[in-house]
Length: 399
Picture: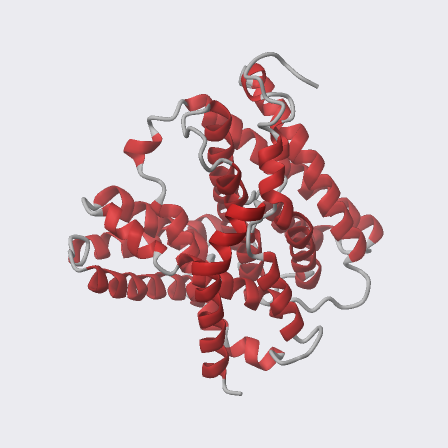
């Protein structure tokens, strides 16, 4: 079976799931679709059937890069400043504090496990530990969306969960982008190789320049099909350039999407165009993520157990500490962090970015942790989020 046929089948199945299964499952059982496509990829991948072998996955590299860029652009397109400033500042500070607590605790725990129990070099262990901390910060936005469907968007708990999910994804992208820049290998250029700070600037500049050029030449396009095609070309250019330089394609794409959202008068049409293939592409990435998973030996067991356990404690405890520090605990409730337990497929996309770089240490361990965390929490992510509303009375500290 050729790669083209495989890709067509993947996209067709993803499209069907997006328009039929996803909505039906969400309405009837409060289940967020996605984990089954990850399982399908695992069954097709080298760890089970081998139908999608390593050589095939290598040829799917450009598709994965496009998916990374598209996912990043979608995230960036939500950063519409006039809308963001309507949300009170403490909501953002609580969300950021929780995400940073989770990132920090998981990073420290994974570093200790990898060094003390895995025998990894202390310096080398920092790289996978930070990557896993970044992925741990991610929360299932789809699960929260299903759980809060029909509730008032201005409800403090709904707003905090939604903002926290977006903040977790943003922290993950930024942290991973900084990590890639810091560990970037030296290149033979004159008069010297760029520093880590300069690599970060280059990573951001790719998205900024791409966004400005798109705005100047295509930003006011009225035809949806032309706008969609132009977006595909621009995202391929931005994410492809970042991937070629061994930088974070998602970080460049986030900047690209944010610039379009704030410079174009037609940002609504741009968001609509980006969302046209969001679900099919997302499910395709889940299948490819499952096919990319190939755990070796048993060295992944302890880091994965630590990842799942410390992430759960960090999400619940970090959310409580952040709400207490922000004076919002009586409103949100002591256990509102339970709504953040769902891992979400965005973390898998970040994990694919880690695998794509190839030479980063402990790639199999990092990816195994996020795959199993997703399988364990995703089917219940909407129920986790819904559980925080059932006992919620809107006042008084509980627990």
